Structures are given as structure tokens and as C-alpha cells.
Image (cartoon, rainbow, N blue to C red; front, side):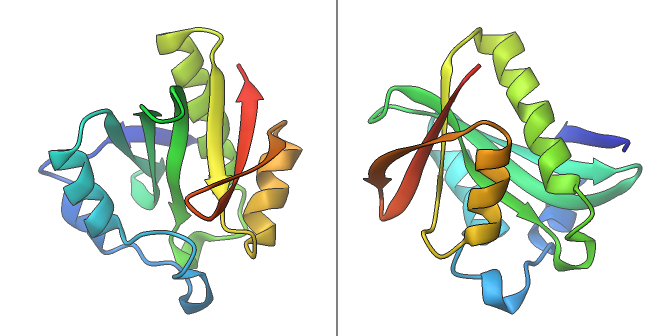
Length: 145
């Protein structure tokens, strides 16, 4: 599929900020500008651009959450023009490999708005387990790497 995860740099941050989800999805994920600002001022947040060949098609951010004491993915978005092509799935698989390579066989988390059935299905299809717990009003899911 030729999806690559790349660091956000001075060369690509503006392209990241300009990515947008569909209007119906805006309540599911923070704007990328907020996420980049958050990563600049808070510890343990790692933003990544999702590229298809030379074009940025999405954004994700992983973190170490002190409250949960887990590594996890706190952001995933694919630009509205690039959705339904499998890019989010492939990017998440690459992130799981990256985290496992850097941190070992850890328990990994993500969370999802209860109304976001598409994301919930994606995570469950990739082996995440619904913990039955809520985390900041979102469903908490985990996966053993």
C-alpha cells in the first residue's frame, strides 16, 4: 500500500494543520493544530504524519499516558479526501509495529467516542479489546503487543 509514517517537522507541519475530517467527524478527533500544540508543550506525545507516497493523507499521535501507565494512540485522522482507502488501518498497523520495536511487548491502548462505530470496528478488527471502561468519556480499548 506504500503508507509511511513520518515525523512532523518544520517542512510539513502546515500540511498537517490543513488536513480535515468530514464535518460529521469533527466531534471525534481534536484538530491537528491543537494536537501539534499539545505535543509541543506536554511530555510523552509523539505526532506522526501519514503519507501515501509523497502526499500527506493523515495524522496520528501516540503517547505514554501517566494515568493509565500505558503506551497508546490518542489521535488518528485521515483527511476527508483520502478516507475509505485503508490508509488508517495500515497506519495503525505500522504504529503498532513501531511501538513494539521501541517499547517491547507492552499493553497498548486507544479510545473511541461511543458514537464512532467505524473507528470502533477498525480497532476491534485489529485485535483491540473493549475493556468496558470509559476514559475521558470514550470507550477504552487495549491490545497486547
